[in-house]
Image (cartoon, rainbow, N blue to C red; front, side, top):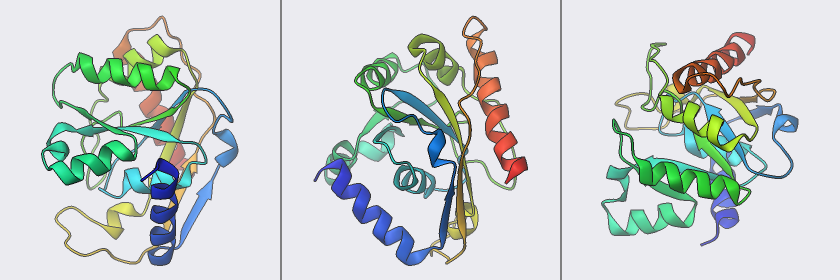
Length: 196
């Protein structure tokens, strides 16, 4: 199963369930590697952002999702690779660098885990490291509605309106400490939320 076949299937299924609006596709670079940094409030977010983005995306996914052989195979087919959470996973960082340098987009959630009820956490320094090391465009993304479609602890998907916003490339001072760069990226994501 190719990435584009999986993306097409996902897009058809999502649009059959949800009214989805996408804004700012023109801010996604037309070629070359880039980082897409988004908010994370639902398990649906990677699917929604991936189907809304016109470019191929690779994904860091928590290592636990790869324990099942069949599910692991599917994840690898659609561009996912494992990352150990709550640690400096050098193998995952090297994998991310390699994929972006090959010209792919990389979807990252700076806060790591999903956030609920508007709570906010400090972004991980890893995204600051990658932004500084790769020196590629970093585009903010904001998803609205997925937390209602599949909330924390929810067993069933609800039909609600979902909106996706892609913002202008983030201006980054790559000489700053990695944590400061990560914070700059997170501020831009939250600005999209305010403007949505």
